[in-house]
Image (cartoon, rainbow, N blue to C red):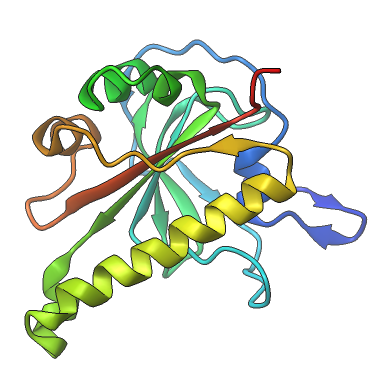
Length: 183
């Protein structure tokens, strides 16, 4: 499925995921490996470039409630779990309500070995710096779109790993729910 164009420009992934909120109710089920959503080509100036990230979608117009993994090689979202798991993710985040109240939640994870194999233990620092950069970009994009977000670091690593079916090398770093702030 291709994403639509607006005014001749492809919608950046951050705009797609952070705007046009709607409610979906789907049962939780493992996604089929063929559920691939093609994304527009990245714009390399001023937009978010996120790698090793998961998007827990609950209420996004035109996008099924599911857990998606960002595939950097294909620049696409790969459905890995069908259904809305924001409540379960909220429980894993020590019952922080905004995790399930946001339209989506971005979950940043790391495979430390990819960086430490080249830089040794200092690579752990580099991973955290890069994750911080990506999270700051989410804050900036959310603000530009009139949306709210927060970085959450208080969660049960094992619960998030189990819920999102992360492999043994992936470590969750943060959760960022995003949605329209209450007024």
